[in-house]
Amino acid sequence: MFQLQTRTPQRWLEVARALRLDAILVLRRFFVVSGITGSRDGYRVQLRDWSSAQHSHGAHIVVASHERAIAPLELRPQEPRSLLSHRPIRRDVETGDERFDAEVILNGPEAVALALLDDRIRWLVRELFVVRGRVCAGRVSVHCAYPPPSSFDDSGSPVAVTARFAEKALRLTTALAAPLDLEARLCERAAHEPHPGVRARVLMVLARSFGSGNAAREVFRDACGAGDEEVRLQAALALGVEGRSTLLEIAHRTEGDNNQAVRAITALGAHLPFEQAIAILTDSLRRSH
Image: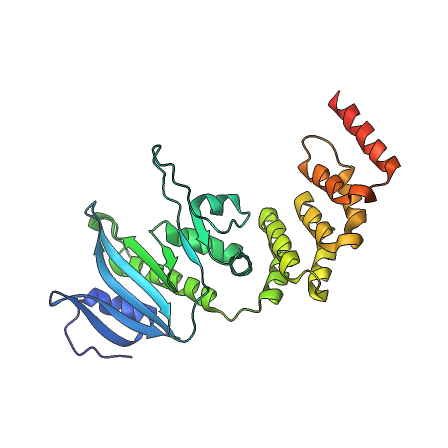
Protein backbone atom coordinates (compact mmCIF):
# COMPACT_ATOMS: atom_id res chain seq x y z
CA MET A 1 0.00 0.00 0.00
CA PHE A 2 2.92 2.33 0.68
CA GLN A 3 6.70 2.43 0.62
CA LEU A 4 9.04 4.12 3.05
CA GLN A 5 12.19 5.66 1.65
CA THR A 6 14.19 5.40 4.91
CA ARG A 7 14.77 2.70 7.46
CA THR A 8 11.93 2.63 10.00
CA PRO A 9 11.42 0.39 13.04
CA GLN A 10 9.18 -2.55 12.22
CA ARG A 11 6.60 -1.72 14.88
CA TRP A 12 5.80 1.64 13.25
CA LEU A 13 5.32 -0.11 9.92
CA GLU A 14 2.96 -2.59 11.56
CA VAL A 15 0.97 0.19 13.26
CA ALA A 16 0.70 2.06 9.94
CA ARG A 17 -0.61 -1.09 8.23
CA ALA A 18 -3.09 -1.75 11.04
CA LEU A 19 -4.44 1.81 10.73
CA ARG A 20 -4.39 1.75 6.89
CA LEU A 21 -2.38 4.97 6.72
CA ASP A 22 -1.23 6.57 3.48
CA ALA A 23 1.29 9.33 2.69
CA ILE A 24 3.69 8.10 5.36
CA LEU A 25 6.48 10.38 6.58
CA VAL A 26 9.20 9.46 9.07
CA LEU A 27 9.64 11.60 12.20
CA ARG A 28 13.12 11.99 13.67
CA ARG A 29 14.53 13.35 16.88
CA PHE A 30 18.28 13.94 17.04
CA PHE A 31 18.70 11.92 13.82
CA VAL A 32 16.90 8.92 15.34
CA VAL A 33 13.54 7.74 14.01
CA SER A 34 11.00 8.58 16.73
CA GLY A 35 7.74 7.90 14.93
CA ILE A 36 5.68 8.35 11.80
CA THR A 37 2.90 10.51 10.47
CA GLY A 38 0.33 9.50 7.88
CA SER A 39 -3.15 10.18 6.53
CA ARG A 40 -6.45 8.34 6.41
CA ASP A 41 -9.78 9.61 5.09
CA GLY A 42 -8.79 13.27 5.44
CA TYR A 43 -7.28 12.92 8.92
CA ARG A 44 -3.62 13.27 9.82
CA VAL A 45 -2.28 10.79 12.38
CA GLN A 46 1.02 11.39 14.16
CA LEU A 47 2.60 8.61 16.23
CA ARG A 48 5.71 9.22 18.34
CA ASP A 49 7.68 7.45 21.03
CA TRP A 50 6.83 8.69 24.49
CA SER A 51 8.15 8.08 27.99
CA SER A 52 6.93 9.43 31.33
CA ALA A 53 8.73 10.57 34.44
CA GLN A 54 7.73 7.24 35.99
CA HIS A 55 9.90 5.49 33.37
CA SER A 56 6.95 3.96 31.51
CA HIS A 57 7.19 3.89 27.73
CA GLY A 58 4.50 4.19 25.13
CA ALA A 59 3.19 6.17 22.20
CA HIS A 60 2.01 9.76 21.85
CA ILE A 61 -0.87 9.82 19.35
CA VAL A 62 -2.17 13.03 17.78
CA VAL A 63 -5.05 13.13 15.28
CA ALA A 64 -6.24 16.23 13.42
CA SER A 65 -8.51 16.85 10.45
CA HIS A 66 -7.13 18.01 7.08
CA GLU A 67 -10.42 18.97 5.51
CA ARG A 68 -12.52 20.61 8.22
CA ALA A 69 -11.99 22.02 11.67
CA ILE A 70 -13.22 19.96 14.57
CA ALA A 71 -15.72 21.44 17.01
CA PRO A 72 -14.31 24.29 19.15
CA LEU A 73 -14.27 22.23 22.34
CA GLU A 74 -11.63 21.58 24.95
CA LEU A 75 -11.85 18.35 26.93
CA ARG A 76 -9.31 17.30 29.52
CA PRO A 77 -9.23 14.91 32.46
CA GLN A 78 -10.26 16.12 35.89
CA GLU A 79 -7.01 16.06 37.85
CA PRO A 80 -6.94 15.34 41.61
CA ARG A 81 -6.81 18.67 43.41
CA SER A 82 -4.41 19.51 46.19
CA LEU A 83 -5.96 20.33 49.55
CA LEU A 84 -4.00 23.59 49.42
CA SER A 85 -5.37 24.58 46.02
CA HIS A 86 -8.13 27.19 46.17
CA ARG A 87 -8.09 28.22 42.53
CA PRO A 88 -11.47 27.45 40.92
CA ILE A 89 -11.49 25.09 37.95
CA ARG A 90 -12.77 26.73 34.75
CA ARG A 91 -15.62 24.67 33.37
CA ASP A 92 -18.01 26.05 30.75
CA VAL A 93 -20.25 23.01 30.34
CA GLU A 94 -21.70 20.22 32.46
CA THR A 95 -23.46 17.52 30.49
CA GLY A 96 -25.77 16.22 33.23
CA ASP A 97 -23.97 12.86 33.19
CA GLU A 98 -22.60 12.83 36.75
CA ARG A 99 -19.88 10.28 36.12
CA PHE A 100 -18.64 11.99 32.95
CA ASP A 101 -18.72 15.43 34.57
CA ALA A 102 -16.72 14.12 37.54
CA GLU A 103 -13.98 12.82 35.25
CA VAL A 104 -13.87 15.38 32.41
CA ILE A 105 -13.52 19.16 32.29
CA LEU A 106 -15.40 20.45 29.25
CA ASN A 107 -15.07 23.96 27.86
CA GLY A 108 -16.59 25.51 24.75
CA PRO A 109 -20.04 26.42 23.39
CA GLU A 110 -22.64 24.57 25.47
CA ALA A 111 -25.05 23.90 22.60
CA VAL A 112 -22.29 22.42 20.43
CA ALA A 113 -20.99 20.25 23.28
CA LEU A 114 -24.41 18.83 24.12
CA ALA A 115 -25.25 18.30 20.46
CA LEU A 116 -22.12 16.23 19.85
CA LEU A 117 -21.46 14.37 23.10
CA ASP A 118 -24.04 11.59 23.00
CA ASP A 119 -23.68 8.54 25.25
CA ARG A 120 -21.45 6.73 22.72
CA ILE A 121 -19.02 9.67 22.41
CA ARG A 122 -18.98 10.31 26.19
CA TRP A 123 -17.98 6.69 26.70
CA LEU A 124 -15.24 7.01 24.05
CA VAL A 125 -13.87 10.16 25.71
CA ARG A 126 -13.70 8.38 29.05
CA GLU A 127 -11.89 5.44 27.46
CA LEU A 128 -9.28 7.76 25.96
CA PHE A 129 -8.86 9.83 29.08
CA VAL A 130 -7.81 6.73 31.00
CA VAL A 131 -4.63 6.99 28.89
CA ARG A 132 -4.13 10.75 29.31
CA GLY A 133 -6.32 11.82 26.45
CA ARG A 134 -7.12 15.44 25.64
CA VAL A 135 -9.00 17.45 23.02
CA CYS A 136 -7.50 20.89 22.50
CA ALA A 137 -6.65 23.31 19.69
CA GLY A 138 -8.47 21.22 17.09
CA ARG A 139 -6.61 18.00 17.86
CA VAL A 140 -7.21 14.78 19.76
CA SER A 141 -4.11 13.78 21.73
CA VAL A 142 -3.47 10.52 23.62
CA HIS A 143 -0.53 9.19 25.63
CA CYS A 144 -0.78 5.40 25.92
CA ALA A 145 1.72 3.44 27.99
CA TYR A 146 2.81 -0.03 26.93
CA PRO A 147 2.35 -2.88 29.40
CA PRO A 148 5.48 -4.60 30.79
CA PRO A 149 7.13 -6.87 28.18
CA SER A 150 6.42 -9.94 30.33
CA SER A 151 2.66 -9.37 29.85
CA PHE A 152 2.71 -8.92 26.06
CA ASP A 153 0.26 -10.97 24.06
CA ASP A 154 -1.48 -10.34 20.73
CA SER A 155 -3.75 -7.69 22.31
CA GLY A 156 -1.17 -6.13 24.64
CA SER A 157 1.84 -5.70 22.40
CA PRO A 158 3.08 -2.15 21.67
CA VAL A 159 1.75 -2.42 18.10
CA ALA A 160 -1.71 -3.58 19.22
CA VAL A 161 -1.97 -1.00 22.02
CA THR A 162 -0.91 1.88 19.77
CA ALA A 163 -3.23 0.84 16.93
CA ARG A 164 -6.18 0.35 19.28
CA PHE A 165 -5.95 3.79 20.90
CA ALA A 166 -5.12 5.50 17.61
CA GLU A 167 -8.29 3.99 16.15
CA LYS A 168 -10.30 5.35 19.09
CA ALA A 169 -8.69 8.79 18.63
CA LEU A 170 -9.65 8.69 14.95
CA ARG A 171 -13.26 7.82 15.86
CA LEU A 172 -13.44 10.73 18.30
CA THR A 173 -11.91 13.18 15.82
CA THR A 174 -14.35 12.03 13.14
CA ALA A 175 -17.29 12.61 15.48
CA LEU A 176 -16.08 16.08 16.47
CA ALA A 177 -15.40 17.10 12.85
CA ALA A 178 -18.76 15.96 11.46
CA PRO A 179 -20.92 18.63 9.75
CA LEU A 180 -23.37 19.91 12.36
CA ASP A 181 -26.95 21.10 11.90
CA LEU A 182 -27.20 22.34 15.46
CA GLU A 183 -30.99 22.54 15.71
CA ALA A 184 -31.57 19.11 14.15
CA ARG A 185 -28.86 17.51 16.26
CA LEU A 186 -30.17 18.98 19.52
CA CYS A 187 -33.68 17.80 18.63
CA GLU A 188 -32.38 14.29 17.96
CA ARG A 189 -30.42 14.27 21.22
CA ALA A 190 -33.37 15.59 23.23
CA ALA A 191 -35.59 12.87 21.80
CA HIS A 192 -33.25 9.87 22.17
CA GLU A 193 -30.64 10.57 24.88
CA PRO A 194 -30.89 7.63 27.34
CA HIS A 195 -29.40 9.45 30.36
CA PRO A 196 -32.19 11.50 32.04
CA GLY A 197 -29.84 14.15 33.44
CA VAL A 198 -28.27 14.76 30.03
CA ARG A 199 -31.64 14.73 28.29
CA ALA A 200 -33.00 17.37 30.66
CA ARG A 201 -30.01 19.61 30.03
CA VAL A 202 -30.29 19.17 26.25
CA LEU A 203 -33.98 20.13 26.45
CA MET A 204 -33.06 23.27 28.39
CA VAL A 205 -30.44 24.30 25.81
CA LEU A 206 -32.76 23.43 22.91
CA ALA A 207 -35.46 25.64 24.43
CA ARG A 208 -33.04 28.51 24.87
CA SER A 209 -31.59 28.26 21.35
CA PHE A 210 -34.45 27.02 19.14
CA GLY A 211 -37.48 26.88 21.42
CA SER A 212 -39.95 28.43 18.97
CA GLY A 213 -39.22 26.00 16.13
CA ASN A 214 -41.84 23.42 15.14
CA ALA A 215 -39.40 20.51 15.40
CA ALA A 216 -38.28 21.57 18.87
CA ARG A 217 -41.83 22.00 20.14
CA GLU A 218 -42.72 18.52 18.92
CA VAL A 219 -39.78 17.16 20.91
CA PHE A 220 -40.97 19.07 24.00
CA ARG A 221 -44.47 17.58 23.67
CA ASP A 222 -43.08 14.06 23.48
CA ALA A 223 -40.79 14.66 26.45
CA CYS A 224 -43.73 15.74 28.62
CA GLY A 225 -44.67 12.05 28.69
CA ALA A 226 -41.21 10.88 29.83
CA GLY A 227 -40.72 8.84 32.97
CA ASP A 228 -38.22 11.25 34.54
CA GLU A 229 -39.65 14.28 36.36
CA GLU A 230 -36.75 16.60 35.54
CA VAL A 231 -37.12 15.79 31.83
CA ARG A 232 -40.87 16.46 32.04
CA LEU A 233 -40.29 19.71 33.92
CA GLN A 234 -37.82 21.08 31.35
CA ALA A 235 -40.13 20.09 28.49
CA ALA A 236 -43.15 21.70 30.14
CA LEU A 237 -41.23 24.90 30.88
CA ALA A 238 -40.14 25.05 27.24
CA LEU A 239 -43.74 24.77 26.01
CA GLY A 240 -44.97 27.77 28.01
CA VAL A 241 -48.77 27.94 28.11
CA GLU A 242 -49.07 24.56 26.41
CA GLY A 243 -47.00 22.96 29.17
CA ARG A 244 -49.09 24.16 32.12
CA SER A 245 -51.08 20.92 32.42
CA THR A 246 -47.82 18.99 32.83
CA LEU A 247 -46.56 21.54 35.35
CA LEU A 248 -49.76 21.05 37.35
CA GLU A 249 -49.21 17.27 37.39
CA ILE A 250 -45.64 17.75 38.62
CA ALA A 251 -46.76 20.32 41.21
CA HIS A 252 -49.14 17.79 42.78
CA ARG A 253 -46.32 15.26 43.40
CA THR A 254 -45.11 16.66 46.68
CA GLU A 255 -43.87 13.46 48.31
CA GLY A 256 -40.35 13.69 49.75
CA ASP A 257 -37.97 16.50 48.89
CA ASN A 258 -39.49 17.12 45.46
CA ASN A 259 -37.48 19.92 43.96
CA GLN A 260 -39.33 19.57 40.64
CA ALA A 261 -42.70 20.19 42.36
CA VAL A 262 -41.41 23.38 43.98
CA ARG A 263 -40.07 24.65 40.64
CA ALA A 264 -43.29 23.74 38.84
CA ILE A 265 -45.33 25.69 41.41
CA THR A 266 -42.96 28.66 41.06
CA ALA A 267 -43.23 28.52 37.25
CA LEU A 268 -47.05 28.40 37.38
CA GLY A 269 -47.24 31.41 39.67
CA ALA A 270 -50.59 33.13 39.30
CA HIS A 271 -51.69 30.43 36.84
CA LEU A 272 -51.93 27.88 39.66
CA PRO A 273 -55.67 27.77 40.53
CA PHE A 274 -56.38 28.73 44.13
CA GLU A 275 -58.19 25.49 44.97
CA GLN A 276 -55.33 23.41 43.58
CA ALA A 277 -52.80 25.46 45.54
CA ILE A 278 -54.77 24.71 48.71
CA ALA A 279 -54.94 21.01 47.83
CA ILE A 280 -51.18 20.86 47.20
CA LEU A 281 -50.44 22.66 50.48
CA THR A 282 -52.82 20.40 52.44
CA ASP A 283 -51.33 17.27 50.93
CA SER A 284 -47.80 18.49 51.62
CA LEU A 285 -48.61 19.27 55.26
CA ARG A 286 -50.25 15.86 55.69
CA ARG A 287 -47.20 14.09 54.32
CA SER A 288 -44.87 16.04 56.61
CA HIS A 289 -46.58 14.71 59.77
